[in-house]
Length: 313
Image (cartoon, rainbow, N blue to C red; front, side, top):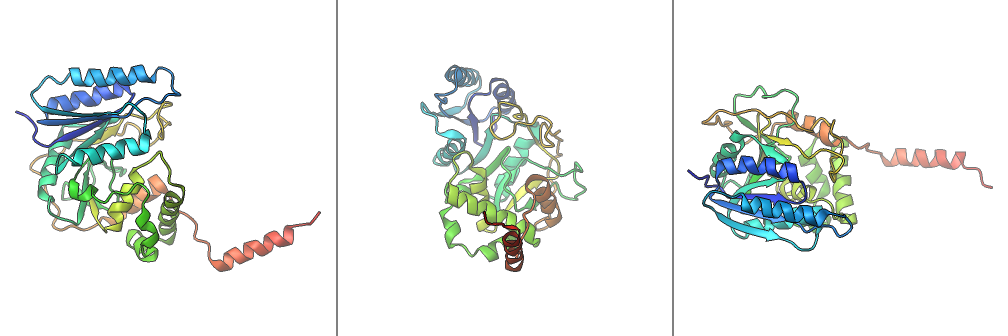
């Protein structure tokens, strides 16, 4: 029996990680499998051979009946536009689906969790995505339901709908028109947390980085005041930490190879869509941090101190 929810598998140059994730996908036998691969970087010796090998290996190991669509790029567009353009391509073909990158290793219950909740919240604009991630210290969390709601659309193994992805803007141009005070108050009560996000989005809007896409998607969901589904226990292990990674090079990082836990079905649902603020504060402090809020008075004091210490030569 095949798995009816479409899956997008984003691959690049990680041979062993790709094989591990593919084997889990293969066990599900999805009826529709979309495979996207960025092109090799011309400055990286031997990368073209790796990329070609992985693409061929994945396609040649699809041994169940399914619809296969591929987006294989000849030129490298980078780890920002590569994944985000792959998701856009995916939703040109389907209304909803699961997205897995080559270093996001899900357990078996991840797929049923996503499928059930994609169906449950399909038409509910309050919900942005279904995430497979849980970064809390206590696992499983002591909740009566099997999941909670968060302001963070965590995308290390996730699922969503076309309606949530539509409007994605790589350069978050809407940031300049947004009521920023009202927006950051929605995110957090703590002013140092508010300041962290304000500076983050200011920087993305100004610098237009080419090596990320997830924060731009965070902005889209947050600006819509949407909440993400988060399981009460982690369902996806990130196996991509190491010296060859782009952003996650420390193999001893707290989030590297986090254990996963099985959920029981049928799922127990929360009584209402309501944010777990305490859980979000923990994620903010663990993953992102806080930024000092400096008042105009403090800024003036610091300026005066620097002027006093300054000795002209």
